[in-house]
Image (cartoon, rainbow, N blue to C red; front, side, top):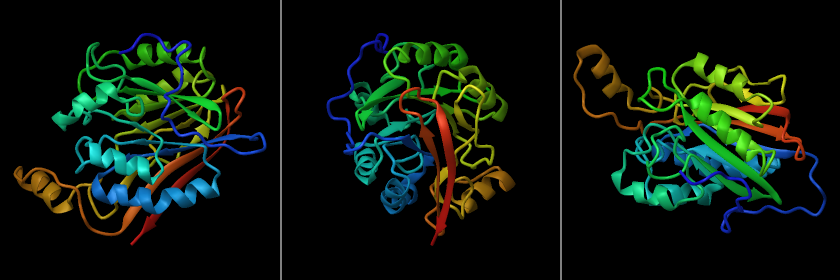
Length: 285
């Protein structure tokens, strides 16, 4: 991981959105796990309208399932950015496409969980500029029922505290299996992070809220991809695995309908504290 972020300049290629009048709130769109080509199609269909309706200044999405349900590729990442995503987080599937590991090392708009061992490709945080504001994004992965990693509580807290020297707008993607771990991490970062959103389980929760310290939180923002599936995967293959202990490798379902899951967070641009939020769930044929 790179040295501490204090004083770090925003990437020169980051998207910048400008308006004539000062903004009253800085609006984030946080998109759940984007699963395969159906998920990428939801980005193209939903992002332009949502960005306009909610006056979104920056869109952050989890992309660890964006390429066939497992990992990332150059073309699928470019497709997501072209659809209106500004920054991609990831999770335990970030290493599934071996050829993409070198890309991670050189990217400032895609991060992997920060609590992987030191020396792993890529970075665990990044900074973009939108509407003249710096937005810091941190990614950590839980340890309950997940691959063995370093302590997400300690690492997330250290990164967020350091990043507050650069910007008050800080978003944390907690990629974790256990609900309790995500909730605990949110309370651990309350008042320091602007928003903490959970990913990985692919099922949207209905517990969106603003914590006492001003941090927006949802346990899991949900999956963007095929609804008629088992968390994005072909249901026939999954059922065969459960019923018979056999079955081929999981594959993304290609059926309709499709769903898009996200969370809109309104922030005070000076303090970075959340002042409003709106959960998004859209389904279409």
